[in-house]
Length: 404
Image (tube, rainbow, N blue to C red; front, side, top):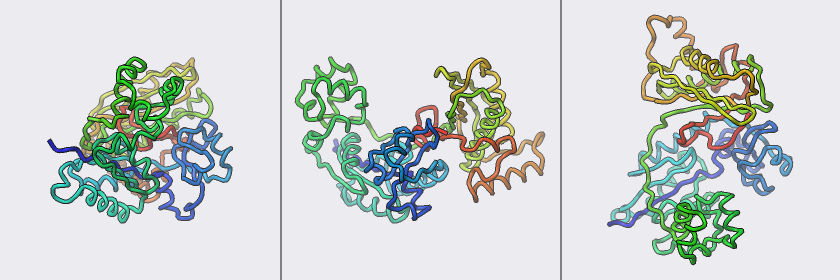
């Protein structure tokens, strides 16, 4: 049986890098991308901002306090998706098997490449091609499994490459903090730290039964990963099956004019993304989170469509059917799922030539000037409608807690 060769690729400070490609004046400056209101959080930040202590998922209020000279950008999911898809296409053309773990992170299985070409040489040439064609900084790591490669990439940043040869997994991991293990979150780390366990090398010396006693099945997983063991396969890349947007409000609200405006803008935005990606949807889901953090969702199936009018009316009907008018709303979300390839078919009973031409003209303007270049009058008050976030756990277009 061939020993695995798994390559992990990570686009460094991806959102920031995209913004800098579009505006070179941002080079060398502290950049923060994320929500710009009091409830907003940092989605991404440049290394210059990190030097001040800014980190992803930090509140924007705190980030601005510790780095007041930072340039704050709301970000654009459409632009980031376009860059990400470009990278995906290049990898698809060259890699035998790859997994897109998120908008800026990839795993590639190149097992057996050493027989014909050499894994390190192939990886270096792919990296060079990506750098040349996308101009995005990229870090790589190569090892026998996904966990070690992912951790290796973090050590190789920024814009570097690292190979962990077979047999060196444990010695490579030993001096690192337990926080480097992907399945170790803050609470788990705090618990282990209280037991005097802060470094991977400590777990490596422990019997597996002690980790199991402390953390159950998760303890076994952590112990194995600390030993450099990871049997998870690279899952072949597939197209997303749903797409959605959420909007968290600065202040909880029951303003129906505002809510209706935002819901229409969401539906319109997602419908454009469907048409732009040659997709159709057969299921609409509305989500409401109330001020007490409870939430409700409701979905409706419908014939495959990418029509603005159909999707807007369905979204509004679903919202009306689930909204409890006695409670303040903290967040609303909209999702289109059951996506398939296909262009929108004209409805001979409802669509007119003028309406079809109007929609085509609006889409043309959005593609040329941005997705917010043109919208219905009712949606003009929506401003930034939120973050694209597939609700079903698929890799999001913006994998961060961006708030409007």
